[in-house]
Amino acid sequence: MKLWIPFAAAAGVFVGAAIIFGADWDLPPVDTDQIGYRGSGMYHTLDREDQAALKLANVAPEPPYEADPEGDRAKDVYENVQVLGDLSDDQFTQFMASITEWVAPVQGCAYCHNEENLASDEVYTKVVARRMIQMTQHVNEDWQAHVAQTGVTCYTCHQGQPVPANVWARNLVPGEKGTGLGWSGGQNIVNKAAGNTSLPSNALESYLLEDKPIRVHSLTALPNGENPNTTKETESTWALMMHMSESLGVNCMTCHNSRAFNDWDQSPPQRVTAWHGIRMARDINQSFMTGLAPVFPDNRKGPEGDVLKVGCATCHNGVQKPLYGVSMLQDYVDSLGSKTNTDVPDFTTYKPGETTTMSPAKTTSLEPAIGAGEGATALASAD
Ligand code: HEC
Ligand code: HEC
Ligand code: HEC
Ligand code: HEC
Image (cartoon, rainbow, N blue to C red; front, side):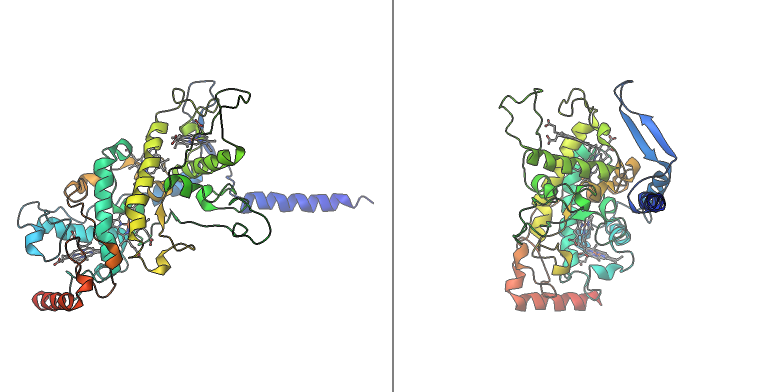
């Protein structure tokens, strides 16, 4: 009797089911767009179902109402407005309503404020939010090589959640810390940051926080001793490339002609934008995210205790241009379009629940008596 037949059939059914329901495979129908010259094999393959879901998920909200730019300035009306002081009172109030919708729609104003004393900086999220305003202004003014006139707002990353959906943190996989099983090089465990592959899990740290070289290509078919890179570096580059492709919902062809991955002349213009994007993400992480470490509580940090960081998917959320290229910034040019106050407070002095004013000029956390006094007067005047 041929016993192997039913076994083979059963195995076939299992594997088939696993492919369809388990693995991240797409069922037809798909659409293909030609994006390069005929014969160069440069196509985009897009799954219709996925595209429909992405379209629904990436919609830019309208401003709550149109704000009047005339009238008293926020810095004259309020007590502790350090970055947005030049907005009109109406613009400032509208901005507060907008960031509440963008970052904490469920929790409301209280997510960042002691509602008895809106001027106080005692809630850590307010201190983070102020730095995030500076960060967004910096991206819109200094990184137009990447974000163009489209720009970004808080919604680009947050999309209605206090913690953006796509962030990353340092994650040394087991085995790397010496369990006696050898050194895995951060590989062989599926990780989201490397585009759901088991390529090196620490690649984003090397390229989007540190400044390790990304280019690994040899210029000759056979080794001539000029290229010092080994397979190990190549794998890390590949992990970054998978992260970038997955983040934008594209394939390698969007930025490369695969017959010469290294050659800029044969690459689509998107590759240049991406080059700036790598530097921008690194700058955001180095200049803004890591510095906020003393302010974030432990439950907002990664498994290794570092702050959650920005990758390509943080803004792109699976689409080639965030929010399909719709510019929310055009309605918030006065608040987020350019840098206003770039001073950085000393975040190591921050004490949640105690620090009433977090500013570069003062060290209120060292003078609790004064801090408490200020809070009390503010409370009195708020009534
Ligand atoms: C995501 C955090 C966040 C949310 C949510 C938020 N705010 Fe603010 N708020 C801030 C920050 C940051 C400042 C300080 C801005 C600056 O320094 O330029 C501020 C300042 C203020 C001030 C000025 C207080 C003073 O006297 O200095 C008022 C008033 C205010 N917010 C009202 C509101 C209201 C009303 C809501 C809800 C509709 C709200 N905020 C929601 C972060 C937030
Ligand atoms: C480039 C992406 C990006 C942009 C733009 C951005 N944020 Fe963030 N934001 C992050 C990341 C990443 C975190 C870290 C989350 C963590 O560690 O909890 C964060 C954290 C925060 C938190 C702390 C949330 C918590 O629960 O701990 C607040 C509040 C916040 N952002 C407000 C804002 C505001 C307001 C704006 C716009 C002025 C803004 N963000 C723009 C990426 C962004
Ligand atoms: C969003 C654009 C983008 C996508 C998608 C992309 N790349 Fe890249 N790739 C770049 C950029 C930009 C560089 C150069 C990075 C630098 O020098 O900082 C690069 C560099 C490379 C290099 C090194 C080239 C050299 O000169 O050594 C290789 C190899 C590579 N990519 C392969 C891939 C593969 C494979 C894929 C698909 C899995 C891919 N890339 C997807 C933008 C992209
Ligand atoms: C702070 C948010 C933000 C981050 C982080 C970010 N991008 Fe972008 N990116 C944008 C915006 C906004 C645009 C749209 C610019 C425009 O309208 O031309 C864009 C456009 C692009 C484009 C051009 C798309 C096209 O078809 O013209 C590429 C490619 C790209 N990003 C790649 C990347 C890569 C790769 C990373 C990570 C290394 C990254 N981006 C990180 C905001 C971001």
